[in-house]
Image 1 (cartoon, rainbow over the protein chains, first blue to last red):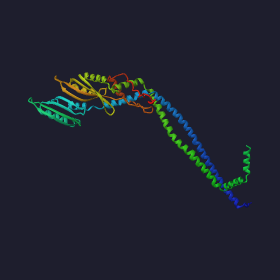
Image 2: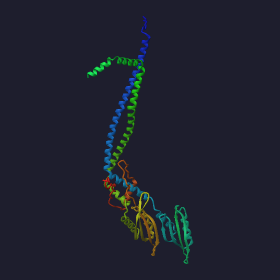
Image 3: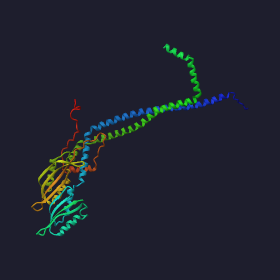
Image 4: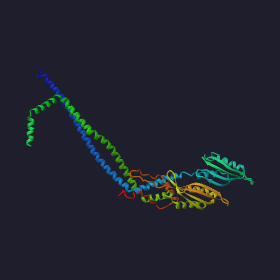
Amino acid sequence: METISINLLPKEFTAEEIKQGKFYKIQAVGISVILLMVFLSVLTISLRIFQSSKIRSTQTQASEAETKVLSYSSKQASLLLLKDRLSAIQKNATTTSNTAEMYNLVTGLLPPELISGAISVGPDGGVLISALASDSNTLDRLFSDLLDREKNEGKISKVSVETLNRGKDSLYRVSFKVEKK
Amino acid sequence: MKKENFSKFHLVRNPDFIRNIDFVRKIYSNFRIFIFPAVVAISSLILIVFVISPQTIKLFQNQKVQGELQEKSKFLEAKAVVLEGLDEDNLKQKLGYALTAYPQEQDFANALGIIQEIAGKNGFNVTEFAVRLGSERSESSQKYGIKLEASGAKVFFPRFISAIESSARMMEVGNLEISPAREGDIVNVSVEISVLYAPSPSSFGGPESPLPELSKADEELLTELVASGISRPAQQLPSQPQPRGKANPFE
């Protein structure tokens, strides 16, 4: 059996009810938002409090470790000084002075027939030699060996003859200067 | 108390007040659909601006600080463990060798002894020596000079020079002059030797400075120094400079 329902309430009442329903929805959303904001505020504040206590404990740990390290400061100083010295010694051990390097190089290139006299080597690696040679071939060989790039390892830039004499004894007296590259 | 009750009662019964309340209620019921969201929005905004946002920013900032602190703490703890494990006597002994090879100050007597020993081992007889006071400074080291007059076999001279340069005590050959002596293969030599030294570093680092490690090459070098016979009791570490005089000179 079908029933017929007739709304006898005035139209304003229906409109008011719709308006009321809409407001309840807005109210629910608004309260949710407020609750969410309050929750977030409480959460961030709690996290900050927790974090602060953790930072304090880490700080205490760090300062304890620092005190411990400071108690070994003499060991640390010894170790640092030792490392500093060993590095400097190693660096120096790998380098040879210009003087020793050039002396060894030039004397190694002198022909055996050449009788060397005074040799002087400066800190810049410049070598001044006075020598006696019995013949001109020895002198030729001397200068060609000194200027040979393979033999002088590319370390000699210039050889200049300062004096060259030949005496009554047929010996050549030569004095020459070798410059380092 | 009585007065207060009276005023409240008076206020509630005041027709103006009742009219005002009714007016507010009417306004609210008419515009509540706008007023409520506005109140919620303003409250949320206040919470965001004054609580959530600053606390979150601080949280992230402190996260970084906490990370740094944790790293520092871990580093310091590890450093303390390493330092604790170091044998101080052994370290001082090693330092003694290193400081003999490359001292902190001019050590004329030690250097002369070493040079004379090298000369003797290579067949050179030292006839004269002179110490040049004052020092030359280079990038990291300082030097003083020793001029040596000696005579010996010419064939041993290169070995003599090499021995000086490769000596455990750090030295460099500067000027050298060789002139043949009257007898046979003997030469008279004049050698200027630069003896190196370097003052100790002004600072040995704070607790947070990293600790250097002795490499394999360092250990090998130490073994060589020990084998070279260079030895001396461990030197005192230079003490940190202490302030002298009064804190306030006008007192």
